[in-house]
Amino acid sequence: MSRVAFFRPDDERAKSAATIVRDLGCEPLSDPMLAIEPTGETPRSDADHTVFTSKTGAELVGTAGWRPSGAVVAIGTPTAEALEAADYTVDRLPAEFSSSGLVEELASDAAGATVEVARSDHGSAVLLDGLNDAGAYVHETVLYRLIRPEDAGRSAEAAARGELAGVCFTSSLTVEHFLAAAAERGVRAAAIEGLHGATVGTIGEPTRKTAEAAGIGVDVVPETAEFKSLAEAVVERL
Image (cartoon, rainbow, N blue to C red; front, side, top):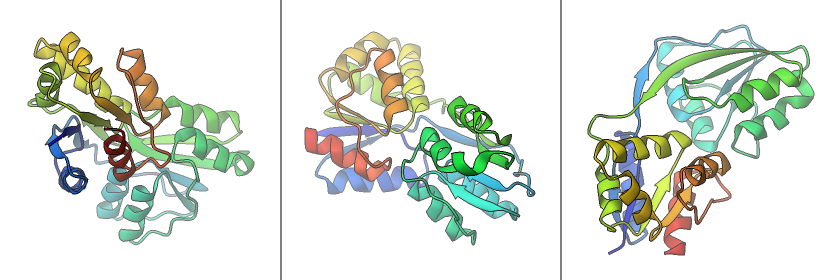
């Protein structure tokens, strides 16, 4: 059975990913590369638009009792669903699930508007710069930090041994943490070489660029930035 690695946080996301990979007929290798460290902060409540970029951020504000005064904007269907589950109304969902897609979505309404961006400490500068350039007053609130778990790296060792048929990178940070874990275990070069013989998928263009800049060839990027679409694309290419 083909072995496919993924790097989702060690919660329901990893469990869901394992089920998806198993249902596609492959052996899942879960190696969480991200752990969530909440900051305890909440977004400002007086913005014209409040932007959420992840399911995690949506869940954190839901438990904090935050209420918006303006429009709620989500990047990605999982983010929108998490906001709705927390009893928020999602007013805008860009067709392109990316920072550049969101800038395009809000560009016509940005001039003079206050835009609150609520996300992790590793958010792309593309979003803030793009909104600023469009004339918005932009404020960022860091809801959580993304750290690498101490025991991460099983997938790097498996890649170095040539045991992976596929990998699913879901963010640039998962690529960076994969390589850092590989380096700590002394297998960075071997892990990259091992991935040359595997089908490598990334969830979007920024993640693809990060992987390729590190010498990892990328075979597939799904049209929809969701894990299920990514896993399906990787397995279809196997």
